[in-house]
Length: 147
Image (cartoon, rainbow, N blue to C red):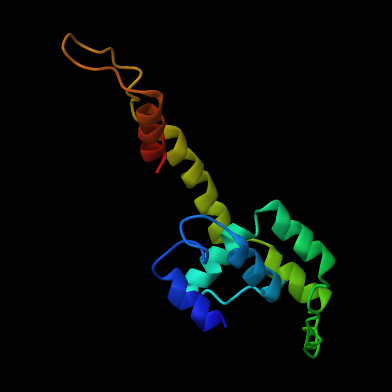
């Protein structure tokens, strides 16, 4: 049945011809809630999707009971064992920064202070004949300067 619809719908939009008609209504009613698969019957699927929007189709589907679909129970995975907690003394040792790391921190802070921000395009006035940059271009330039 669906194969016949597919063959007909390969050359025309509706089973009745150029417009939706009685043949489309009968075919839709026979299919009910069972929409064709798009992978195997693409033309029939498109037809079904269009026909579904008619008022008569809504009425037909409301009368017909939806097809029951059995759903497999979800598969439960076994719980993974929790990682062993480290003793408190070892955890504290790992958390403390070393003396070398403490010496590097002030040097990094000074280097940040020495860096001057790159000049932004909005700081430079536009000369005659040059176009002003848009807000998007300015935002891009700022992001590039931050990197």
